[in-house]
Image (cartoon, rainbow, N blue to C red):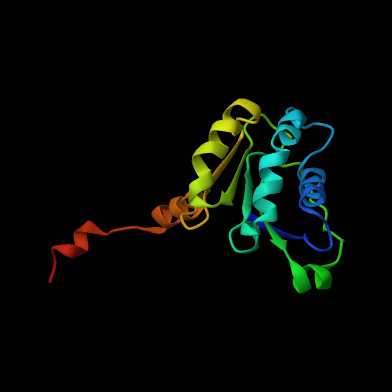
Length: 154
């Protein structure tokens, strides 16, 4: 299942404050790699400042449901305010969590290189080419059934 959250960013929060709000939302006392989220701050703040998460979400997969996080900017951020609906689970509470986030095509390589050493559970992708939705692909494949016996009959 996919759960969506919207977080007000600039001008309600700075990019740094937005990332801090996201970290507070997705982590808890049982987050084994909390330092990873802090280590990724400068890169995540950069792509938040570039406003890419307005149209393509930051995605957190791992423990529990898949979480998609959109940032809202300008008037949308002001209307949204600072309240964020809490989650009923900790997406980073297990050992298999991962985060993907959108950025400019020209920044993908250097950002991923930096993240590999600082925060290997986090990666970025070209905002114009989001990664395939694995759950949707699996659901579509699971829902596809061919009755081969019918094909040969007239």
